[in-house]
Amino acid sequence: MSSGQPPVSASADEVGAPAFAPESAPSTSFEAEVGRKVAEARARLERRAGLSSDRPTHFRRAAERPFTVEERDRVTILISGLTARHERLIQAALQSCGYSCQPLPQPDFSACLIGKQFGNNAVCNPAYFTVGNLVAFLLKLEAEGLSRTEIVDRYVFFTAGSCGPCRFGMYESEFRLALRNAGFDGFRVLTFQQDAGVKASTGEPGLAFTLLLGLNALNAFQSADVLNDFGHTCRPYEVVPGTTNRLLARAVEIVAEDLRHRRELQLVDRLPAAVVRALSRSVLGARTARVLFNLREHLWSRSLDRTMQQCREVLARVEVDRLRVKPVVKVTGEFWAQSTEGDGNFRMFEFLEREGAHALIDPLSTWVMYLLEQNRATMLNRRGLAVPRTGPTLGRWRARAADSLNFRRKRLLMNAGERIYRNRYDRLRAALGNVPHGLVDQSELARLAAPFYNPLARSGEGHTEVAKNIYYYTRHGAHMVLSLKPFGCMPSTQSDGVQSAVVARFKDMLYLPIETAAEGELNAHSRVQMALVEARDRAQEEFDRALTSTGRNLADIRRYVETHPELRDPFYAVPDRAGVVGVAANFVLHVSERMDKDRAWRRSGVAAPSRVTATQPTT
Image (cartoon, rainbow, N blue to C red; front, side, top):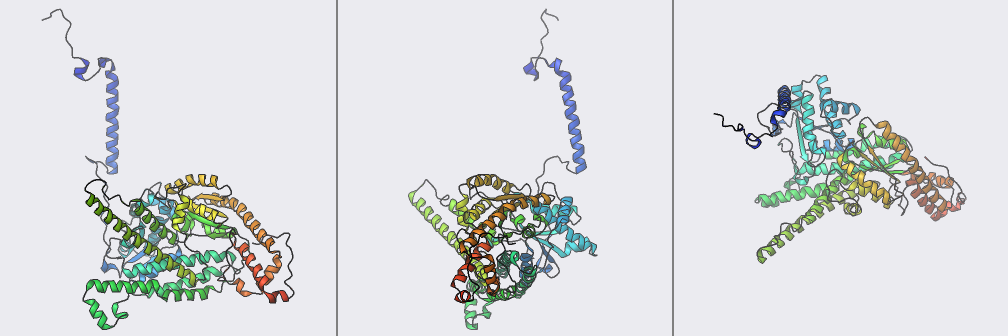
């Protein structure tokens, strides 16, 4: 059969292997064996973890038992994440609608450790503190004798949710994971989207956002803001330590009692029976009238103003000494880190006051105004996108007209909502003598941040961290800006990167960012202390210049204050001077002007001015 020709063999292309396959066969066999062993090990580990499946499955949120209307009488709603005063007034607002509500204690360091024990790795500091605080409370209930089944049946947790590029959007799933790992599987977590506005909903019939709850919650939110601001404004200058906190607690209870007894108005409460019968013929007419009456009662009536006046009478007992020279420190940063009052930000407000500083806080209403401004900016940016660029001319004109009408309608509603919110806030401030600070204009913040940070960039505080730093420096609102944010917070990391350009632009700016990891308290306090040295020097130099410009001696100023009790009243209005930051500097300029106009004081023989050559720091 041999023909004298070499045997014919398949080419490399025909068998799918290179011509030198025989030489590489041992290597190929070894790689195949390694691949087989790796696949077996992976399958074995997946079976142990319960992950083995023929095909991948997508994540689905586990079905949760609903919170029903019938359960309201026996289920307690737990709330957390705000300041103690906000939570106390929100509790009263929920109680006015028939809910049982209980604020959780302020989270401490042990709550963070519990959150880390039962939660995922690499979660935000606020999530560890919040969920750990919830689990710690449930474990305490169990230790007091309640079974886990009873706890799951009798309690639910109410919190804000979000969607976006930062980890805040994952909090809800982290809560459920930690609760399941702690043995409270099935515990219900109710959430609402923080940027949903009047359309906010928990999706559960047991907690419905009614008109009464919405208006009462708004009043609770704003009342807590102004009372908090009053406390931070007066506490650094109180003559008797602890007086401000003690009297603020009484004021909060006065507001809570008012909110708890508010009820939704019905037409028969305000209109004659004949008018009620006429309006009742139309469901829309009756509903509109009822909404308008309740809006007027809760937003424009004087009932809450009278309540705040009672608070003013209580808080007037605080005696203040405004001649204490203290640096004003504006606190900004991530929403939770800059507002919590516990270990989550190393009790930074207490620390600042112990170090002789005046902490200037952001009211939580600033966040509400930021959300309104973001919606307005987004609406402006999208104007005209729905108008076709091609097609019949008449059709394009109609589309442009419809788009313009829709834009104007939305802008009118947003402007009205912002004006109503701001005016209501200013009325509460006025009831407390305008001691609490006003809300910053968000459009101005967006303008200041625009050269450095796009105001349309979302997540976290967005552009406002950068804008507030510039605002309080250029407007002489603070000697120093302290930005608090959780360790590894992505939006705050972006802002910190931009802040380097801001600080390079404004050479004298004193700005300090602090990341609040659970174990970094000593380092954070040390950094703040170092920055406060320069802030104190600036405050003292400013005070010395102000006192020198009056041509008077500090002892004469103090003697005049001691003989005029109204100057020690916390509600006494001291005008702010352009370019002057400190309370003491503004106060000494004002007192000097009063002394110049006070003829009785000049005739008393103790008003002879003396040129000041040096002053001692007053703390």
